[in-house]
Image (tube, rainbow, N blue to C red; front, top):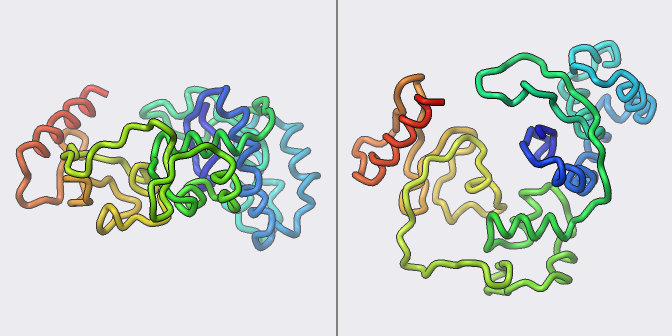
Length: 243
């Protein structure tokens, strides 16, 4: 499923994960209700009207946007405060336009599972890192009640999680824009100078530059490309060319 989740942006998740993840993030979405113009809306009336129109496309809701209001705020308000998912072929490579959106079933929130999933993917991390990634607050209470490994300096991880030795070489990585492996932390200093919003290269675990896909080639910002980075660049180029 493709739905509005963390950072009020689109994410692809399984139907089972969406069922608990959407309500878990509701405190983040509630903050949108306080945005200028949005806070003046009759929230429940608007959401009920959108529900009645589903399945629908966002442009078909333009008549519900108050005159002079920010249409982008309205769009985010609707997509975050309702369990809307984009119907295929939305999120299919090369398919654009405004997708049909439909309501999906949701269940109970599970903030403990949210923290466990975060650490499984991006740990070791701090409470503030998890809060920056999720948009939620007071996660220190969750960290306190979970059985986690305390690693010092405020860092936690799941018990038994693999943690390579400090001298283990990090392979080169070509990351897409807004990849959680790079921006899923409050303190990003571990990566050097982070370039947010651009495809990024990690060399030895540190941001070394940016890259872009021209349609037939992967171009990098490095003047001198190490051998292992060049091999990864070619693998990425070949994969994108076949996509």
